[in-house]
Image (cartoon, rainbow, N blue to C red):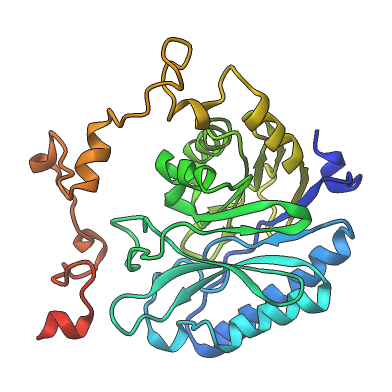
Length: 338
């Protein structure tokens, strides 16, 4: 049930619009300004397209394209003109928006960042991608965890980016912090299509959480992105799916956070977020609340190591033209040079 894509919005509903944005080719500051204007234009299209829409979501790389260019001239800052334009677009169209920027980082490589801005132009959520798509992406690993914000109509929203969604721990962290809707923005190309679909569904079902997922779309002359706007209900069912591959199409559906809350509190069978921390509660009061997972305890202790660690062949980005890094995580460029 998706309320005919959000046309019939219910009292407790949140209507989402996922923009399968045409993949741009951004090289210069003028290109960046033109693409900013294009995104602002599509915020307006989203509002005109559906008066019930609460939140419009743009894919990862919506502003910069897939070139992986780290030229400081086209990187963004939180107080720069691009973010200011997105804020104004949300105000002008009385709509929430989710946007992607490549964020200047004087101390290291740029961050791949995502923003949720409310209908009054306030940044409600600011996230830096935790798991850049190695070995292809040069971005600094995110350092601020996974935030959750209050969203439209009383919802709780989290944002992760692309490759983040291939790690079930990311979606579980969103749910653990209270997210009822998890947005996943991406620039994925066609080879990832099947993995994209089943992880979007499993992230939803395993966490009793709606997922709203969208990629860039079309070609920039080199890369072909797939669109695949996809909204999954908390039981894993796909309630909207952009299968046409049509660039700039907006995929819409209504999500019911109240039903998600009902499932999380009322389900017995398959209430996975609760049962994960209360193993075997039928047998023992409250269930076992230990941590029997070696990979978790090793990671927390800084000792994560795979049995096949020494045989892993790709451990940096040199095969994709990036120099082998020498700076340790947490070090700035200045620290590493001294």
